[in-house]
Image (tube, rainbow, N blue to C red; front, top):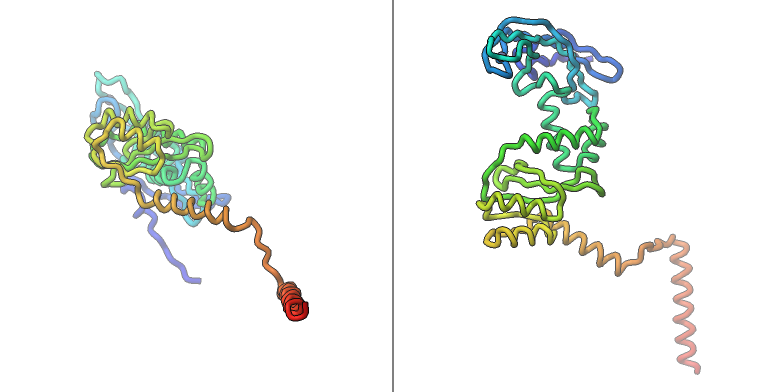
Length: 286
Ligand SMILES: [Zn+2]
């Protein structure tokens, strides 16, 4: 059998050393040790280089081949010797990779939020199950809400507005996307246009809005920013067209159309032919 070696360390920050990789009960466990020698204190931002102790924690990462990936991390606690700082000891973090208080890597969290915003939290949780990511719909909702609170306000004149499902069929919100970068810039409660009105009042610079064809958004935009150009985007026009076609075909075509077997077809044709012959005979010999 062909053997190949993949250097997993390429996919981790250089301050983390992979000690071993094991397959444990359908999960891939990657044992990692931190190699940091200093850290910035999260409170006073002073550089600290004295270890206090080590701690171990399990962090979920992106799955590999449908298997859950768990990082078993040994990391450091550091002393902060700044006499004016209240933080005497703190746990280390690795920028852009993990925060010490989180149970998953940043790259996994970013993937989950992107998936949830493109589907729904419940739908995303079901997809995650298939991929080998362990997360519930409720946890995803909490993550998305927290992410929304952390989003930097972006002042743009071009936005996209759409509804978005926390839970399909029950809880909806409104997502606002930067029209140029296509990145989400805010999440609002509800989809009846009330929260959108409040948002637009704070963002009078908006000149172009792409939106679905829901009247709630249209009237909210017309009321607050009557000068803004409203564009029904292609996706929603297609969606509306398909719904219209479906409604027409539902009216015109019966729900069940029987497809006849050959023998049945022949019998029907025979009966039709007989009727025609009888009619002809009746016409010729009244
Ligand atoms: Zn400090």
